[in-house]
Image 1: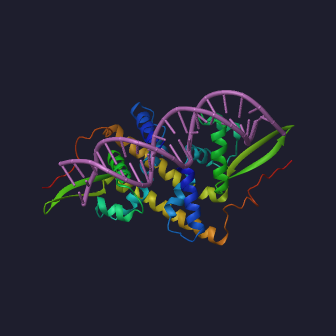
Image 2: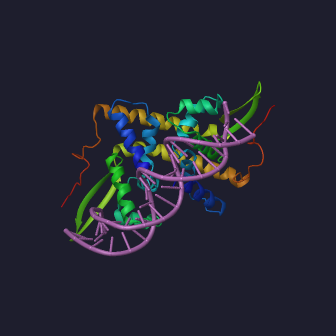
Image 3: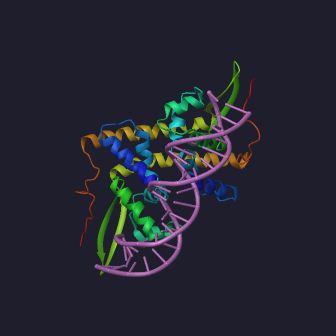
Length: 138
Length: 138
DNA sequence: CAGAATCCCAACCGATACTG
DNA sequence: CAGTATCGGTTGGGATTCTG
């Protein structure tokens, strides 16, 4: 349904329904590896296709291609083809628009770090124990 | 795969692999309606179960229940049961932790708004036309 | 090196019906 | 009112194989 949401958001915007700003943003990095891809590109350095296959653990080329193409369609990254000797190479880098989304990723990174620290101190997962139960004020 | 990512991230954190901060954050609002739920709760006002079914277009109770429960497990929202007359009611509101993620949603909202304005001026979708093609510097 | 083309499965989601 | 239970459809993603 990820692709679905991207399409839905596009359609809504194209048909004049602009009430989906958060969803639009979210659709930029929905997809298994997009967050990772954008994150790796955030410094401005271009990255080759096969570099990604090494950087991202266990990604198939098909899925990687798909994620990269969607990011290109969304104008978040751009592709550059060139020849090196006689072997074709391709690199990807952020577009100007893509760069503007990085602060959000950094905020997400920071929030996650803080949350992890909290969880180290006071693990909360699978404890349906305390504070969050129904406060049943009958 | 949404539940899957939530579980994976949890497992990674519980097994001492803390290198997934962004993914943890993202897993907080992955799921079809979580963004919407958190957004509606951001002002601090509690919302009843059936209010959500009215606020969210075309959500089934099953899916809504699921999304709410995951948010509770993740300590983003909390549930409050009480009796009103002799009818059981339930409301949901943000936890303290849940409140800390709102600024990220607001950043996403703002980014989306800006992007929509850009697209109004210079529609970019489905034009694989110009700047983003391979810059083929052969 | 950088894909494209298939096949296939898991699981998210929707619709519907039932319960306390 | 606020759920639970069940069934079935859709699709993103993995594994594998084939090009230029």
